[in-house]
Image (cartoon, rainbow, N blue to C red):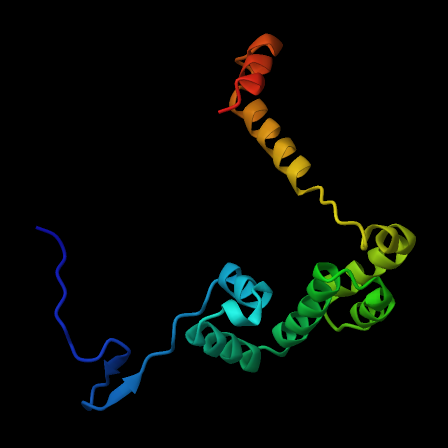
Length: 158
């Protein structure tokens, strides 16, 4: 009939050979969950999410640094604070985390463009969504469709 389990006490404990209960480590959250906890505004996180994020921050100093820099940059973009861009880039370039350091370097290279784009209310998110949809349609019909069929699918947009 399949595998059945027996209840052996509390779900987060494990019995040792001498009968004493030993705590089982908590499940490690996925990187996607951690990123969501970091990027979500403080008021929209549940108390359990705040507690789990605090545990992760204590366990990994790199995540603490990345969390602080990501929140500062997100605040800068959301509230269009272009005057703070130089400071944010400087902090990123001094980071001990390689990808954040190179992100700061790329922002420094395009400093004028980023500064000019921050105060604008427009977003390329809609265009990006359409490009993503077009690529999906193209991949799904790769090798089996003519340009006419692809055009029909694009124009018939569900």
